[in-house]
Image 1 (tube, one colour):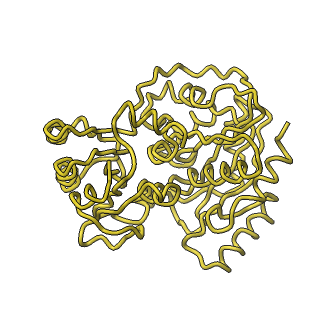
Image 2: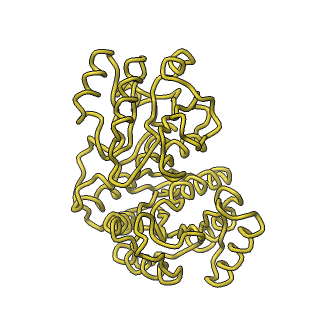
Length: 347
């Protein structure tokens, strides 16, 4: 994570981390903590959860003072919910962490700095607050001009289906092959993993495509930018940010991310998931505005809820139906998707 030192130096926060789980509603509610635990486990000294929290990331359970004594620098509020607000117990825990000497990092929409009690606790303890969903960059309006370089954007049938994991898995695979590759973060967890990025769901709508152009500028080295997708064109709540990403990315290739056991859009039981072929065509149609040559090069399946044999069969069925490589980036890797990317798009 090459840029993390710069971010930590300017904001005086960073690893080692205590991951705050609190008492989440479900497994997806701790996706920020889970992303750090999976991609940067060496940065995490422990987890803090309420007694009635059944979820765990496998780290030692710690109180705030104990985590500080074990070397933790910052507590990461690793939870997410609809609207990104802090529950009263979360606010109380953040204040306790600050009083124990920890800096606090959050990716929620509700800013740490907007809570007077949290700000007061940070000041009296000389601690730093970092809101990952806030960017101090000057973001231009997108212009859609062709720029040098090669880009992949992950898109989804729904939100929270693995777009960040897929982007990072592609980066890891391509770097192992000696290909110049950079992950471009657009969400709070990705920003903490990468040490840089812009939280596009917190950008004013007119500037979303410009934000994506800014984090993935022209590159002349023949390498790839792997841009983290957000939301879904088929999710009524989040389609706007998805469309802005498709236009700003100017992607040469798309990877569709999907969770096969879901029966409706996350948080919207009255909206079914789209047909995969329909979803592919809609994303390609939108992406063609800024890159008419864009291609769909694979499907990344989140099979965490399936048995191994079921997962393998699900990937095989989708691959046969869509004539695209289909793999679970976590359980199976992304090698066939990378093979297809290089065969279809590399110049």
